[in-house]
Amino acid sequence: MVYNYFEYNERIAPLWAVILHTMSTEMENTEKSYSGSGRSKRTIVHYLVMIAIVLLIVYAVFVWVSQKAEIEELTQTNDAIAQQIMQTQQQCDEYNRILSSDDQAEYMERIAIEKYGYGYPGEHRYYFTNKE
Image (cartoon, rainbow, N blue to C red; front, side, top):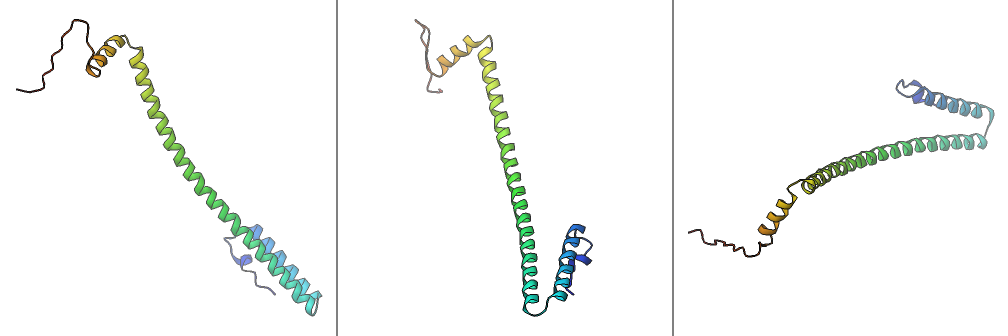
């Protein structure tokens, strides 16, 4: 009889217990019905099938975990981009408020005088460079 660990482990899902129990029962039946070299070949094939199933399960778990990590990373990136969009939207709203306000002419005049040094015709501007 092949020892079936999963059959006695209560934490493993019942489906796996049924699958492994069925496989061990088939192996016992094949061992009883075949004799000689055929029996050992059949047993090797069953072991290889069980190993393949276990490897498939391990691979599926690995893929699931890696996808969860990728989803978490993309969620963080999405949150950062949403924050940038919100900041840009606030800047855009501020610019629209400035452009649509009634004091746009005053704003442009102040920028022209302060930033570019423009003035009205006939106007003399004096700048003090020394604080004394």
